[in-house]
Length: 319
Image (cartoon, rainbow, N blue to C red; front, top):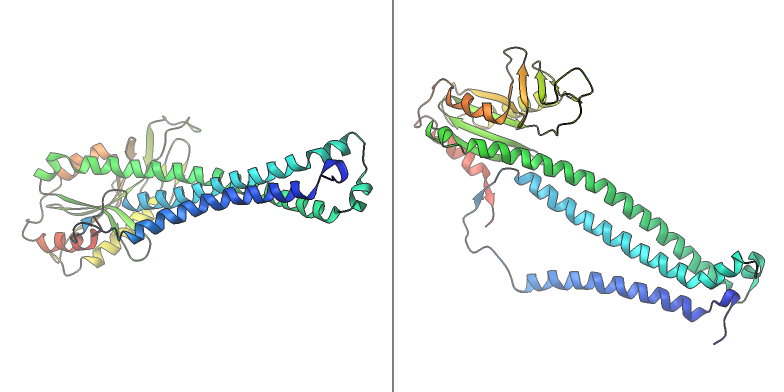
């Protein structure tokens, strides 16, 4: 078969590109077919009653969405990389000829079929840029996934403490991932004799201290959480907003003087509070004693409608 400049021929170029496109087409086609079969089987929950939202439910959904994006970015990066590799492999004879001085760039431009070479080269460059873009997306999504997973573990750690038998024996009921208006949620809302406690979980990893402070300590001045390596100035404002929303949401559903206490929970840390502030901050272990030792202000009968109101709000998960 007749070859062009550097031993390159048109069937080589077309064959390589078609082969790569075929592989990618089969990959996406199989995914589409799998989803289609699920729809044809009409898969649905075996029971109609919905479940309560578990701890970290929003984080789990976010992780699932990010994982799908990450897998899509990986597939695109690999596909574009393969496409680029095939293009480079196809052009290897031409590149070798140019490197060894057997042909010149002018000869390539003026050779018969040079338009095919130019188009294929542009496709290869686009594939390379697409692969780089996919790699950057995977790099960014990996950090996001780690942060969300860490936050999920923090909410689960707090939920585990709230499941303590002593907390239940004291008459407290915990609701997790309470949906607000729109896309935001409240990590935990606990209802019991001491009132309503709105909890905001802040999970931070331990790192080498960058200031004169023990690595396991976090200071709270009523507004800012001072970690050994960073500050959190939003937690107090966030939990206060959440408490205001809960107060309005529960208005008319329980005692008129219902107490709503905002609390920041920092699992795994030793929290040093520098005063008695409207917003409390503590670790998950201290939270258990804090709830059990809270002054009893309301009876179970007084809180029945409050608990029912939150149960209806959180019972949205299909089986």
